[in-house]
Length: 451
Ligand code: SF4
Image 1 (cartoon, rainbow, N blue to C red):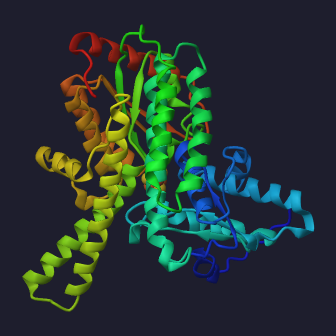
Image 2 (cartoon, rainbow, N blue to C red):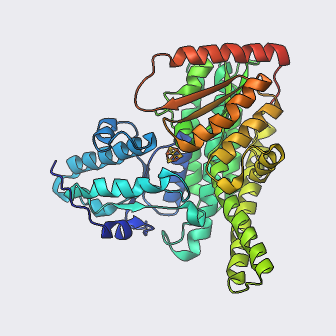
């Protein structure tokens, strides 16, 4: 297909940002399968035509349009969007109009390359004249993933609330799968049942999300738990419990991490992965924390000019965080009476953990805050091993490894780093098998606690 290499800088401001999704199809890249499909269902509930992009089908395109030095998630998502656009062009022919789509690619501010994915992908998309109309919907951590501007202002708060609930439901379905699959009565049963349940829950979110009829959704979630529980064979003894952290895309994208959870299960593990909603809570918490600091600073310096703005931020982000933690707790509580699932860590508690042990600081930011403190919590809760999953060369995850690995060596908790790119390392399975042997020894010596 014809390409051109002229960079149009206006494109970064005109075609990357927040756009109305009412008349355009919203394309959501698949990260964790459950959460993304439920999020798309929730968008549809609000009348936004949304679909989840097929993932990993366009890896060759992703590789062809990156240099290899970018973070792996950038290559995967690049391939996903190019693959979709090429397929749409082939399907629709002369009726294809790239302006009819918004590609949903959030970003993060701060010391990380994630903030540059959408700019880079904008340049690549602009090099295809037929794709240059595609807009990139860039929600950002800079304003706590505000959804303002994508639908009518009076419905933004409802969309935000129900989108958060959809993400927590996705986390819960993931955790249910990891809880039951190691104990399934026949191989493949858990995957089949959970896939059916995902469709059932997506239907519930699409019907009830827009009206915030959460009780209707939660009733269906309870029915799902009842059905999935029956997959477990009560005769299989508890297995070593492994806590997983890392870079959010890699640890939740099954194909990109070469299905690391399944491989650990193959060698005898039960795994709990850090959740997606933890990251959303972290983003709100960071803003709340910054507003508190700014307010204190204004007082101390007697600078009252921006006092009102800081106070407004404090209430906005504090309110978001309060709502999110309340909903998250409510959902886990409804489920935990039926099936014992690992709860999420509260972000303020994770900051306390880092402060008490003087390991790292929230002032430095990045996912390392969550990963380091999350692993210390897994240890305190009595997990039998820890895994850090991340893209090859990922800065926050390497920082995590540098801090946590020596600590785990010292206290005798099995620890494994698993970096990924598009290649398959021949020794990966043996490393996991060795790690699982150590975790099994840990279980025999100290027992299994956790949740
Ligand atoms: S978190 Fe890691 S993978 Fe993601 S942009 Fe930053 S360095 Fe890259």
